[in-house]
Image (cartoon, rainbow, N blue to C red; front, side):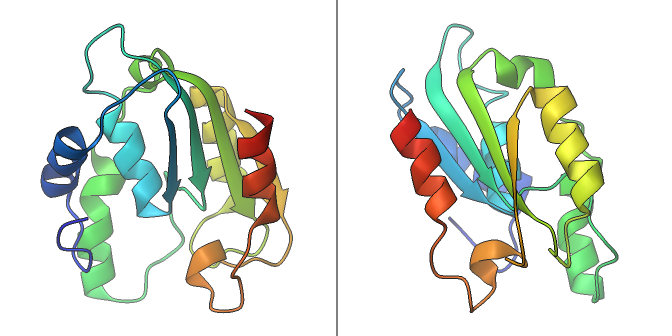
Length: 151
């Protein structure tokens, strides 16, 4: 992704638009802000575009208090720009979310509820994975592979 240390909606969504060809077999997998990127990207394709699945790992719609001003500045547009959940659901046959019960950034109950109620996502909770792949102790996520193999 362009400018990964300062991700913006205005750069990341067009980047996906240029670099992804959606088919009915496409599975998009995102982590953290990458989940936001995928969901916002799926507000943009032509009406009848369909993909197999979205898998959001440590995805978020709300965050715990961020530590630095830079983190707050980066997150603010992602947190405050509305998402068209209804449109996203018209493009994905399946939506999954994997969240950790001890993610220091992502409040579990709030985000689980939004994934389930707004997107109809099948959510899974893993224990003690922190912010999942961002945690240097987590190198594998067997649950993600199980979900993909099920598809």
